[in-house]
Length: 110
Image (cartoon, rainbow, N blue to C red; front, side):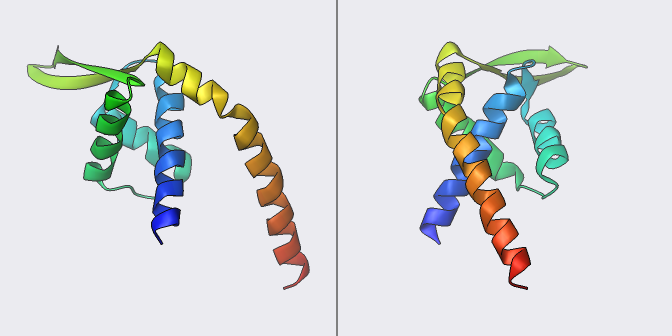
């Protein structure tokens, strides 16, 4: 179970970095985009834990910004974050190929 949690956390981390490639966003907006992408709810707290982890690794940077009379924390991907995301490209492509094979085999044996 621990390995599964680590795998999911890693995939969500990469997805957050991918989302931040387009623009800086605040936590709720990141959560909404994640929901659009994976069609599964992710607890609010979980996203902020991952964002803090990414910030400690210098993959994202955050700052406070005034928005509609409120102060929100917005997140931006850093050069280290871009590098990390791009370094995982080959691994992600291999995972897609392997996942397709497994899914096809499952369908064949139903």
